[in-house]
Structures are given as C-alpha cells and as structure tokens.
Image: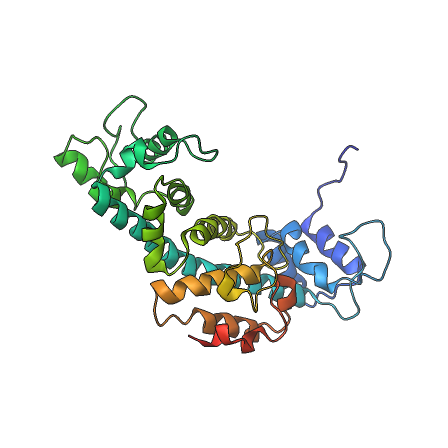
Length: 312
C-alpha cells in the first residue's frame, strides 16, 4: 500500500480535531502548540479522550468523547514531560554512582588503566568486544585510528591536561574516562567483566545482587534514552524490562510498564542518595495531574499506600 496522505496546514490539523468532536476554546493557543509540538506528537495523548465504543476505519482517528478538550490533551502531555524530567533527575544520580562503583573497585584491584586489558572482560560475548570499547573511547577523545593522541583539544580540561603531561599509557586513567562515557557503555562494561567476584563487589555497595544490577542497568539505559529523546513514558509498554527483585515481588506484579522502572529507580536512589525525596515528588506529580491515569503506566490501585513508597 502506497502512503498518499497529504501534508496539512496547522489550521487544517486543528479543524481535523474539531471535526472529530474535540473542543478547542483558544484557537491561537492550539495553533501555537501545533506549531511547536506538532500534531502527530500530541495525538498520542488524545487516546484516553477518544470514544472507543464508536466503530471507525482508523484505530487512532476515532471520535472524541463528549466534553473532551484540547486542554485535557495538553495537560496529559505536560504530565508526561514532567515525569521524564523526574526520571532524568534520578538516573543522573544513579549513573554517577554506578560508574564510580565500577571505576573504584576495578582500579583498586587492577590499577587505573584496567579497562585497557582484555583479560578483565569476557571473551566471545555477543554484546561486547574489547577492541570496540577502546574504539569507542578513542572516538570520544577524538583520537584518530592508529594514533596515540587526540587530533584536537577535548572539551574537558582534565583530558587536555593528561595529554599535555603524559604520553604513556595513551589513554587517561579510568576515573577520567568515566566522565566521558555513557550509562549504556558502563552497563555493557559491567555486564562483561570476566570475574563474578568483581561484579559482586561492585554491586555490594549498591545493595543489589550483581545479576539483578546487570539487568537493571540495561533497563535504565533504555529508560534514559527514552527520556533524553523526549519519548512518551505515559501508556508505553517497555521493550527492555527490569527483572523483579524478590524484595519487590509482593507488590510488583508486572515489569513492562513505567511503574516497574519507578520501583527500580526508588530502590537504587535510597542507597546512592540517602534522604531522597524522589518518591514524594512522584506522588506530588500524580496529585497535581489527576487526569493522568496511573493504571496506564502500570501503577496499581492504591500504590501510594504501599509500604515501599512510604519508607523515604
């Protein structure tokens, strides 16, 4: 089937919503948000406003429920945006803590340039090749293939200081490299450390089993990328899911929605950021947006009363 839909003007797009029954009280405001957010992006937040009992040819262009307004749609969009910012704030603290735990443990055991030695990593792992890790570091430091120094100054002063002072090893120590690599890279590094005892030692201060931590870092990387690319969390079924730890099994029954990631984040934050108010801020976010149905994100009825969410 060939795609033949025409490009519509902002006025035509707003009229399309009106024709389906959406009330738009302020045409100027609606045009502004259509201009700077976009019809397609906003349409995802129209789903709970649609009358699903009405049969139409399109699964996404159903008529709206009686009384549905553009402001309802916009409020749900704003909620999702604030939710992403809340998660990003938490992930930042977790990411810094995890990479510090990895660098500290491995550097104490094997020296500051342990990551350059392939013997510390699994061989034949499907998601990891040691030379690709070094290639990734070279690329981040702007070191041309086959060279031993950056081709131009780095944006980090400490990297430039290293190369102004030292020539061997050709890469800076792990605690400098840690500041330049992504959570996704550190997730893969941790997963592919060869010695189980070393992974356990890294996971111990985070109060998590090393196998669970491996999975959670993968899931957190996925969540971080969703947030960083401004993707929808509301009503999303997660492709990469966190395993359910035994300590959460009593109140966490499903792991494919946002609720499971909220549990993971809150669990880790209590260790890396004692006194965290993240759970309180999450509850306040829902209280301030009563239109956002928690069930669409996997939050069970009465979740705020669960003991887990009232420990911090």
